[in-house]
Image (tube, rainbow, N blue to C red; front, side, top):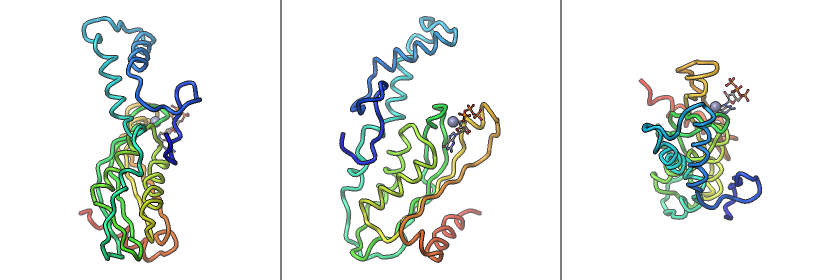
Amino acid sequence: MTWTDQTSTSNDGLRPVPVFDQDRAERAVRELLLACGEDPDRDGLRDTPARVARAYREMFGGLYTDPDEVLAKTFDESHEELVLVTDIPMYSNCEHHLLPFHGVAHVGYIPNANGKVTGLSKLARLVDLYAKRPQVQERLTSQVADALNRKLEPRGVIVVMEAEHLCMSMRGIRKPGSLTVTSAVRGLMRTSATSRAEAIELIKGRRP
Ligand SMILES: Nc1nc2c(ncn2[C@@H]2O[C@H](COP(=O)(O)OP(=O)(O)OP(=O)(O)O)[C@@H](O)[C@H]2O)c(=O)[nH]1
Ligand SMILES: [Zn+2]
């Protein structure tokens, strides 16, 4: 496991996790049900540990994929102005409560003078990949921006995410509908107020 941003370790905190351990996850879910006072052998729960484990394998699937592969293919296109994909649906899980946060991501970049651009779907793939990890929204936002910055060497990058955190809606402080907005800007998007304002205007402007 060599990719640069991979920081996950196994449960013992020592080794990187190369693959999802289905058996271990099933045992853990069974333990959790027992800890809650449930009977994991009753009809409705019998298949639940396996199901939950499979769901986690899918939801944390981004731990097992190299983000640089997503951006491996680039095109030479002489476009040196903003490329922006807005409203990319985003589902992640907060690493504090393992509860979902979900919303939309807006991802934009200004290609460099060589016009190195990537396929539009790759921006959404990148959001997906990083979202499918135990996350905090700030890190998710930065990781998408940093991956684009590293691989495309663009003149600027902007990533904005808006999400509702279920750990704030269905439990704890219980504020359904509250939105957390995070942004990460790199290069020209950080240094040029005009470039940043143009991108933010386009992100905001699509709303009625
Ligand atoms: N900064 C940040 N905080 C998050 C994110 N997702 C969840 N949290 C917060 O993580 C914090 C964890 O706080 P703790 O005090 O350790 O846990 P807690 O007792 O369950 O906190 P409450 O949610 O306030 O009940 C909470 O304030 C959550 O709102 C995130 O993506 N970014
Ligand atoms: Zn949380």
